[in-house]
Image (cartoon, rainbow, N blue to C red):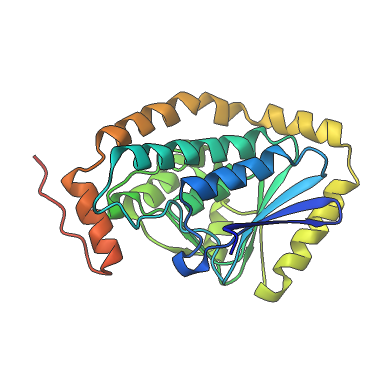
Length: 254
């Protein structure tokens, strides 16, 4: 079974995350496969990222975080940043077709995409401080530009889950549609993009990356701090409690 399914639909390239047993959470290998597909997308008019099995993306895979090792964690962190950068530097508009839960890095994946259409049953939210991590590659910086600083801190710090309609009201997604209309709606958006000038869409997209580029140093600094915290008691407890489906018991502040 391939972790990432890449298909052509007319003038659009569809990239489907395909690890439904872990809600399409990605590891370094899977992030690299998505990145490669994005880097090969210049001959299309648009790109769509979606999930399989009723989930969009649960972010980075937490399977081994209760007993983390430095090389694999560095690979996951770097792979996440390369993936999000690939979305932003892809010359074509990238649409998130959010067909289920977008959690943690999955929510940041939505932040990175140029446009987002959500199924009505989709949910959104960050998980970082709840699982022994921090959403430093989009949610703590660029998301504030998209939905406002206070709302972005609410998502990043309180780790709540939000229905699609609320995500739309906050400005996290462009449109919410009934579940059975999601692909049809996204295909219509792709058709609209295909009628426009690829050259000038690319100029528009690259110009719109102003805030992403301004936050780029924040990404690197944040990832550096996450690397230094690999194996910390908070990381181990957050990952273990997530895998065991229980409330975390983090150490008291020092």
